[in-house]
Length: 202
Ligand code: ADP
Ligand code: MG
Image 1 (tube, rainbow, N blue to C red):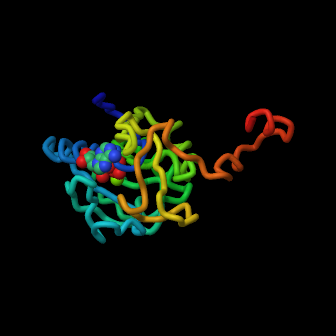
Image 2: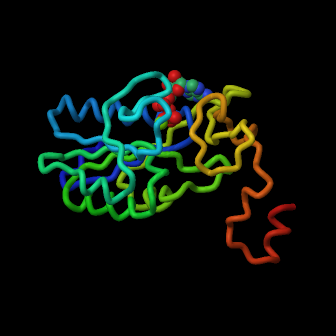
């Protein structure tokens, strides 16, 4: 793991069950062993396992501070904090990009974990910008539940059409590119020339 003296942005991403939260907890624990003052934030909407703690699918956990929006990360910072970790960062408003950038410029080490793609395989919220400004990006595979290959997609197996559906193995499965099934409208967000779309869809 490189060590940036003047602040840094680390982004850990890829699909559900890939181990993003485990990796975040590992980095948090190592920072704590180094006696660096660390604060861990998560979006208040993520109450899957616990109101306060960040919990992985393998039941590892670390205490965190749930916040309602990006500005609350800044407002809740303590003077002594040197490292800021944020889990499920894809759920934040776009302001989180500037908040993370500002923290890094002020000398903080910022560790972010989040889904880069939503269940339609569309880039999720602020993730594209966060990935672009990161000093270091770690993409971790999950395991495809169909064939055991490396999985890079989160397949929704329940019927809901909401972008945000908190859920577990009852709602999502990790899938490889070959076994991921696209929703019909999953490419509708791409701003393509009208004449290009039929060629691509062919
Ligand atoms: P994420 O935060 O990326 O959703 P977690 O860190 O919470 O992932 O959980 C990762 C753990 O989930 C793995 O170490 C493993 O124990 C478990 N797991 C369950 N299903 C899968 C899967 N399909 N592929 C990989 N790990 C899985
Ligand atoms: Mg997680």
